[in-house]
Length: 267
Length: 292
Image (tube, rainbow over all chains, first blue to last red; front, top):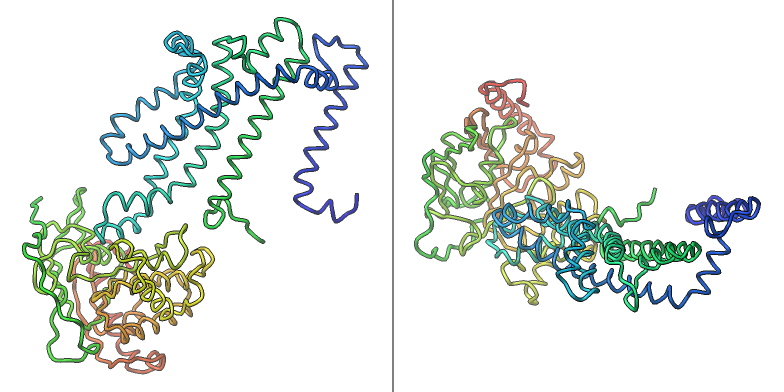
């Protein structure tokens, strides 16, 4: 490896964790082989990859199901969360009256209410989606409300000097100013939507055509198909990482011209 | 607390005359703004202003000078209709008025910091008052923006974001934004306080030039004796606790003023006079250690 490449910050940022990952996988593979650990206890990385390939169709279908619930829940959480924030910011009374209930949603463990929702809602997909929405919505409400309220008081004074309508104040001042907070909420919420979907699947234990990755993990556990369990786990993790990366990309695209969080500072 | 607020305007304001008077000259110019017996008491009992009275005549450049906490900014915000008075009246063209922004009260405010929208390009920031009055988007509006940007020396920066500009340039953009409304009264709240002295002096000259070209009447809050003397036709000195007006010094030096004025003995004389008034004002405040 030539010296200039080592000094390249971007290269190091990618290469360093990659090297660590490869080393850990190698150590894992070698240890499993050396100590002859049975597959049903700790599968080797090669076993996991084999399972990923062999069980691809069932794993892929499960992934699609989990993704469907995650995306549905995420979109609903964003729409409802933003709507709630816009409502809260209209009047302190509305916020004071309703915000405690938003907190209630946040503090109630979804595992505790999922069985109830599953009983109440016939359609499994919707039942799972509602659970995931409950988990994912709070950061959107909380962050966006904070953003809509965090307006430069002098700019607000200026708007008031011109006797602008609430609508103008909202569209021209509050919403653009709230974007960084909103995107912060999106990053947290996207991960939570996935967690909510997986947790709800565990509780619902849905099998058959509506089996998601969580059900795959449960079922593989019962059948001692540990490599398949790991494969499902990897798919969940990858989905989470991709979702997060997508949110970061979107936020950077939207804020790159003006917000400190997305600026590239040259030293 | 008595709630003798500024009474709302009953009739539509008469079309007020354009400013034809050249700056500071002309016989007995009309007062644009009159503040009479204004008291301001905050809900925690702090008396921010006691019996403040001030008339700003057309074409004047009035500086409000005083120690911290003397209510300069409060008084300026009341003039802008941004704060309610506890008792007293504020009149515009000798009529009562409620809030600024209505017809006949073309008022612009320049804040302590540039107060630009960081997400909007300079052009959009400067056009904001026109957009808020639903006048944006027209060719006339765009021309006003172009003219204002050219006058403050920001031509070619209209597509920049505020963060790409220096502090002085941001302040220029803020002044351009005030200009597009063609105000007949410009209120400036320590606009150059955060800038270095070179930039500040340059912007002082620019304000004088723009004032001459546009016929502005200006009320200017500052901490700096030199700035107040250099710019103003009148320096109003305030004292703290409670905030009140204690002195009103005329700077009888003709405009246009050039940087040479800063070096003159007259300038030094005025500065001494204003400094002494400020010393007396500071001594009047109960809590001396906070005075400047």
